[in-house]
Image (tube, rainbow, N blue to C red):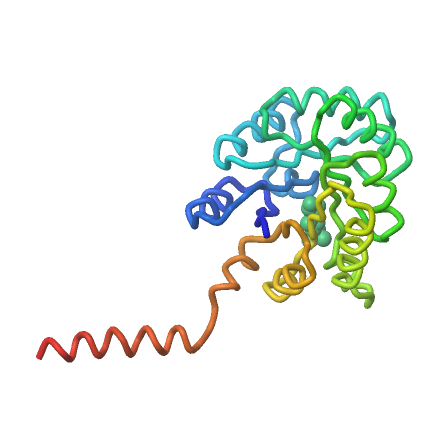
Length: 218
Ligand code: E4P
């Protein structure tokens, strides 16, 4: 399973990259705004800065909602760095844009996926990856992990190359559940990745090893 970090914060990206288990980054307009980045040139520079920290796919989202606007923005983003993946919303104009980008060899991430039908459309259009938002589904008392399972199953039935990128992860258990059912990628806040380390028996065991070592020195 590939691990992406879901943030536009350079310090958090660096911290995750230093662990040696980071495969990519996803951003969205809300995450960029959280870093105070909205001026167009600054946005483009920030994506380049992220690409320089992680050697893997970096999702950069278009703001336009019509085909022409998405193409213009997406081509500009894709030209920034070889690792840029153009993130496109799951709307009809977005599906047209994904087909266009796919024909041109530009990688795409179809975002705001909340149903298997949407994931099927995105795969047919040639999306490189789809982002089902499992946390937001759980938030309304539905089952986000079940959606991931359904999409993985459908893609396997037809051999679609589109990767399932579990997004809107809220905790380490989400990551594990997605791994169990075969999601290709989980994009996670740093706290959820760090949460995977936690086990009280590891802490107790390490403390005992160190104490025994110290006592054996006499
Ligand atoms: C990433 O690709 C998504 O935009 C992100 O995971 C959404 O997460 P949220 O539901 O926590 O905003």
